[in-house]
Image (cartoon, rainbow, N blue to C red; front, side, top):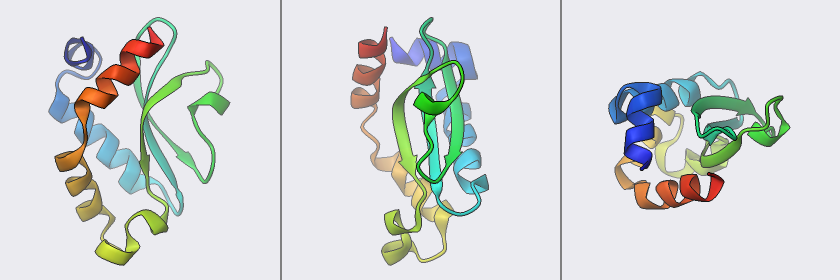
Length: 106
């Protein structure tokens, strides 16, 4: 199950969330943070500028979660407070759907 893989690859769900938040906060300008999986089932937390994504990277990871950090995703509600947007993102994230995405990649 996804929970076991998260624990294996990140240590805990909290550490995964922290990693994704840090990547998203560190993305200068528009872009994305992704949770992706390789062909062996290993999870990766990455970020990408603008329209780039894990499909474009060497190694071809498949994204199972994308966090939009283009300003249109959060500015009307959160202004320039990207961190608040990210905190709330994880409070409403449907982890069952992320798990389904992971299972489809195996």
